[in-house]
Image 1 (tube, helix red, strand yellow):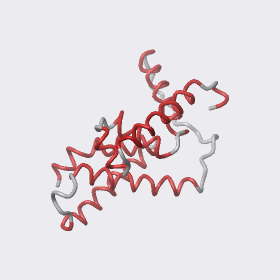
Image 2 (cartoon, rainbow, N blue to C red):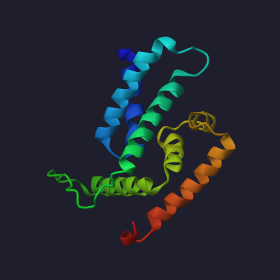
Image 3 (cartoon, rainbow, N blue to C red):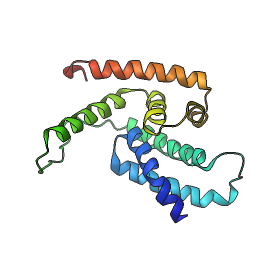
Image 4 (tube, rainbow, N blue to C red):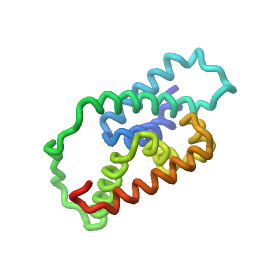
Amino acid sequence: MREIVARKLPRIVALASRLLGDRNEADDVAQEAFLRIWKIAPTWRRGEARFDTWLHRVTLNLCYDRLRRHRETPLSDDMPEEPDLAPLPDERLAAAHANERMQQALATLPVRQREALVLQYYQELPNAQAAALMGISVEALESLLARARRNLRAALDAPKEHR
């Protein structure tokens, strides 16, 4: 199990982080996902689903649970940001700004659109596998991705005061 966790943990944390927008929560989700997998592993039937698909599904479900809980308690804009005391080179600063803008734009998307983009672009899953994880057809995934890209582009192009 240690070897599996060592190999799969970075992808699971990345998936949860992109969906939740919070690295600490993503770490918690990843830990909980592996605990659940460990507990129900004896009942898993090989051949019915790939392990990666199963692990991704458990992770996505845990992310949905957290997103539902957060929907009831909106985040305020006046939360203090953690100061970064180390000076950054211009390139790292620009990359950090672009990443922050992307995270903010992703956060504006409906959850299913965000999930489709994360699976496709950040997890680099083939369409068939991403569609299977989401429980939809490949055609539905492609339609969802098209809407997600259009909405993401609009969010990124929106003037700063409308974000």
